[in-house]
Amino acid sequence: MNRPDRAFGPWLVSPWRRGAVAALAGALPTLAFPAPSWWWFAYVALVPWILMARSAPTGRRAAYDGWFGGFGFILAVHHWLLPSLHVFTVVIAALLGALWAPWGWLVRRFLAGVPSPGRVGAALLVLPSGWLMVELARSWQGLGGPWGLLGSSQWQVEPALRLASVGGVWLLSFLVVAVNVAVAVLVSVRESRMPAVAGLVATAAATSAAWVWSPRPDVDGRMRIAVVQPGVVDGSTSGDKRFAREEALTRELAGQGADLVVWGESSVGFDLADRPDLALRVAALSREVGADILVNVDARRSDRPGIYKSSVLVGPHGATGDRYDKMRLVPFGEYVPARSLLGWATSVGKAAGEDRRQGTEQVVMNVGHGLRVGPMICFESAFPDMSRRLAQDGAEVLVAQSSTSTFQRSWAPEQHASLAALRAAETGRTMVHATLTGVSAVYGPDGERIGSWLGTNTSGATVYDVPLARGVTPYVRFGDWPVHGALLVMAALCVAEGARTFRLRRPAPESLAPPARTTRESPARPGR
Image (cartoon, rainbow, N blue to C red; front, side, top):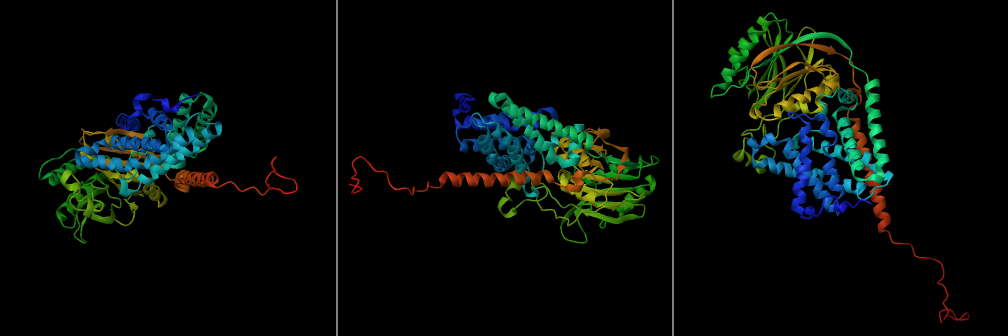
């Protein structure tokens, strides 16, 4: 019989040592994301963390293992924020890490000791559902958004992308966690290996079924879309210098038959209404290359108070009137949550000195040539619901304008670019990820990469011949059904646990039978 309390030896008796090891175990899945991009590692990366939690001597200790592991995961997957937010990154990781405390408790609840086949079967359903609840909670914009969802590590795996078209990144996260649970049981509990193997077989069967039966996007046309990436531009006059470089690069596209030209986030640092000279220069470029130009303005607006980040479409005759104001802002980067309490973050890092203003609705733009595009800005490409809504509203191509210039020499640019592959596969729409300084990339309706990435050392303009698809994927049609299923599983678990606790605490009913006679009682006078 396994002794889970000794699974890691006496060295981990110290709670601080155990916490440190749990944090390291929680950080392991980061290697499955870009830049290392060891996608295969995601299927075993959680095993050490699971083994720690199941070996915990008490439920409270298992919850701490979940908390410390979550801390390690958040800190590792967002490590590139440290130069900007400094110690505040650690504070955020500690707060968000607490979301995994209930998950750690659940691991011990279902896998401690020698779990029965029934408990293992339940664990293969409950533990992935619990993980999805954590991902759902931290996907709220105010908590940083859905960056580093476990399923997004599979962005370059073709069968996984097919699954994403069925259930989105949520389905991928569920299956990846289920595989980790099964592997953890296989390596630690010999007596429970059969249900673990059954879980792996079921996962393989689900993947195969999706591969065979899920509908593929119907490609019925092609368009040529150009991405302009100016590269790093520094200095006090960087706004004007960047615009001049973008102008020169765009001019090189003349005669290449582009149907749309896309500039990156904050590519124009001035409101075009305040700088009509810039608006005229962009319109002249549009006439020269024969295509509308989607720029991104990061400036104080002249027609309303505040600073906005906006996708603005400019045609041969000037701004077309199509404009999208960014709706989901980056916490601390573009606004400070509860600034009256957390405003001190601006003194220890590069938090926003003034809050940007939010837009109110998503927009689908007609860019000419019969092409309708749905713009997103920066980390909005991490939100599956935004790209899904644009596809429902008729967008044939998704465009994300981004800038990761602050994190140029980190893993962030590659991580951000990879998200576009998931959004393309989920919606069955080509997605263009255009940045100022790299990485820029384009993905087809199946999530496959089109052409080459424009890396962080590149300054140039590239035209991509992209397919257009107009079908509806199961994910666009049915939405976040894996999350809804996980919610039902967790609700059923809460009911079952509540009933179990009630049975254990309810006093035993008093016996209604008469007391038995003893040898000292008199038959004539009972009780004597």
